[in-house]
Image (tube, rainbow, N blue to C red; front, side, top):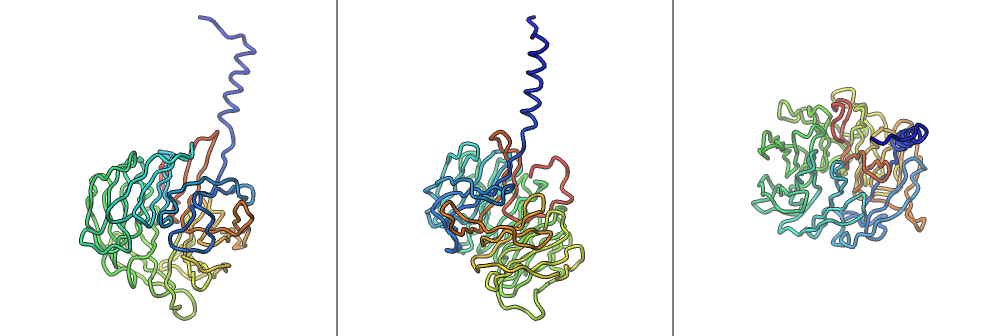
Length: 367
């Protein structure tokens, strides 16, 4: 067998080591236009921001299909290196994040709200939409490879937000005043908690052990704490010295699960609670420059807080550190976004559009 000269072999080995140690590039992917707010829209497509360079605008990916009533949901699979989008006009589609190409798009007869994807990248769970009140309102279960409808699961009216847990075992769905949990292996319901929220299950989040769900209230700035073991609401927590008669649309745990943030979009604030106590206790708030739809989420390392406005906060110091702007230097915002990490043009990790707790997530669990 022919042997490489020693110097050539050394250079070959060093080259491979250097390639293996290429730095990770961290980006925030945000969709436009937002199907739920007019504030901050910028054309039709995905705007990309650099987390490690002051959230500078990097580039945009034009996707004409986003004009189809605006984006209602935007979720990501690191395993598939794909993003899945849903629009107001009942469209669901898939974008390859490594090629920027739309791989497929399909239209469904009910609708598509904030969807979620299984950790193995095989299935999408697609809520039929808060606007849909048919008897078969609930989940569409869709093949993530091509958008083929696999089955339909009636659950309840106004099926809206869905979350696949970080351990991949369960998917949660919010419907009209009920929170339901399904086993992702067979799509069977294993729990349904009634009487959650005030006027419907608004956005919610989960801790990393799937012990507690935190569900936004529909008429007051605050949240319900759902004990998923007991199958019931155990606390209702409100913000402010007196109840604030605004809806709450956005809730997130910091990755280390020490704080819970909720959105008061009408009041232009994000309220912060100490999540090391049960029930969580108020700690303060930060101000926002706009109202808008409402949302909140954190970077995977817990450093940044993002929301439905251009504001970017340092989650630890509670100081505003950036305002998002598009390529025309115009303030930009969206309530549909997630974090993606690349190395050598390949997706190596991705976040989630919901602010999920991560402290007890097992090592090696897909993000």
